[in-house]
Image 1 (cartoon, rainbow, N blue to C red):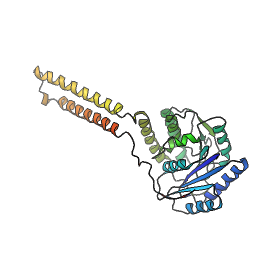
Image 2: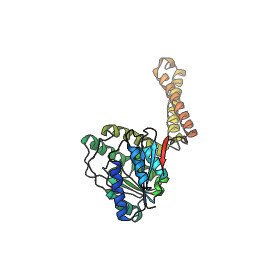
Image 3: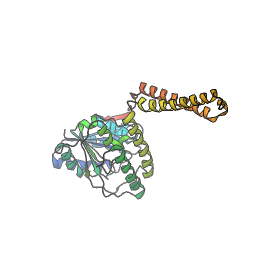
Image 4: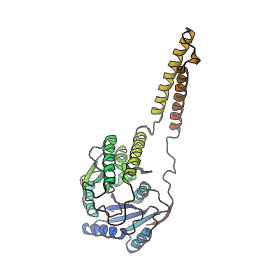
Length: 312
């Protein structure tokens, strides 16, 4: 199979059929073999009914239905797990991503040998409350990740070599950092393509700009810490603990010498209590690092989601 199109969605009943018709036209014009995997992320409207109708008419349409809303990352995780195409393309269901971009994205993966190609919506039709936080977020993400050539980490329109999606784990809210996850997994050839951005045709955006920025910033810190120290927590907690314990221990020795020389009363000096507190905190940090090493392997149930129905 040439292409798998993975589309997470939440309450997008107005656009699903139109989006699939557009994808189908593009695929047929270019002779691609394909599948379209819709993931209904706890939708409460008729989204799943429409996906079922499309599946009955065309076996290229597949679907996953979550019992409740988990978020975009879990939806992508399950979609990636099911994808069979040599090239996997993700897009949003709100018709703001153009399926006409698919042939060029496919070519960049197959002919130019990119591992991942991210869309760049150079001209956007979003309100300032969404675009300004996005610019700040992307600037921070470029700095932390070291991927200097990407302008839009969070663009939903991306293309991947199949090996990439089968070897990264997208969880929580980490869909924003799939290029970073791919880089950490050893898929270093990451490219960008300027893509057309269209104004939302139906409904309203499900995300608020500043909320996304704050959450994205926290997730970026988490990802940086996990990628740097996730498999070696003792390296950070053990170091901090040892350093604090050493400072507290030296301070205690200095105070003890002062006591022996009759220069001060230990218990009357606030430095004595500060030194003891520093030693205690240092010990706690060290033990935190030790326990972190013991549980550094993540819970096997982290990506266990309640799937109500599937269409294959």
